[in-house]
Image 1: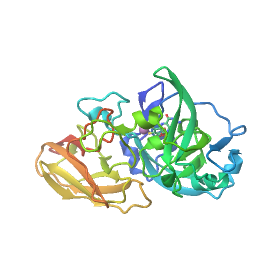
Image 2 (image 1 turned 120 degrees about the horizontal axis):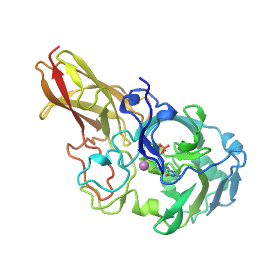
Image 3 (image 1 turned 180 degrees about the vertical axis):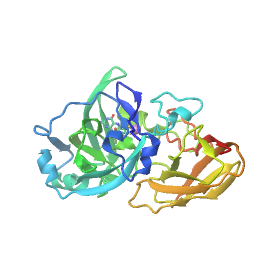
Image 4 (image 1 turned 90 degrees about the vertical axis):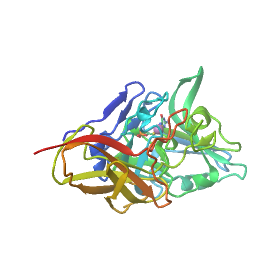
Length: 345
Ligand SMILES: Nc1nc2c(c(=O)[nH]1)N[C@H]1C(S)=C(S)[C@@H](COP(=O)(O)O)O[C@H]1N2
Ligand SMILES: [Mo]
């Protein structure tokens, strides 16, 4: 099949991955979902500099060549937008109307953030690390950049990378060329694209995309003001779509599952109300990557069926039947369900 990205909004550009593509171990870059708050900035790696300043011993201005000279790491890991599935929430929250394709997997290559922080020397006054993107716009009458922070203790995780290659190639403009942050296992908002400045700060950051967006308000489970972090456990059906007609014979139902909290240990399928059967799920090949699952189903009688899939991770987190509710429509990891028609051959 010749797939292409599914447009969600044009300006800023937001587009989702067709679900069948997720069966591949990595998502081809041209089909990797795109989530932007502002227009894509035009940057050039020959003049690019990453500034590292604030509460550091020696402020730095690093060229891309200098960042590439740091021994790199490569991780194959999923990234999902915290608003994935928002369109299915009721009442419908404001925000980008994602269906279920705001999730993709790439092979991310870059320099460990901690190495750059150590080059600059972390001053003891630092409590957070702020990441400033080059993209900007007017929000509530104020000119702002896309910026997010991480608590210093979390920012020292050697798996947090300054990415300069995605799927073995130079980053594309949509995905943050020439440099982006990548925080494995977290919802995508943490992985600041077009990263131009890292500032160590001595008070917690309270910018728009930190303390207003990407926070749970009026949520069913989380206390008010709790910031979003790890991706919640989720499984999707990739082999079929709503309304598909299936023969009354053995069929393979396939899909993927992932969690930011650890390996997915169990995937269950329901084809009849409230009855769950085990699917076979592959082991995680790397942390927070998608794991494929498969279920062989042999419907005995024609008719309409609702297929549901539910994943559980190593920490025992599992998916709710009904989505959680919160003001901004985040973290919808309700079971994926779809009705299909089984027909006589
Ligand atoms: N500078 C910048 N970084 C950003 C964003 C943005 O709008 N600007 N969007 C964030 C969000 S909400 C997500 S889900 C991911 C999406 O990354 P992608 O477009 O490469 O899929 O980037 C994050 N980093
Ligand atoms: Mo996002």
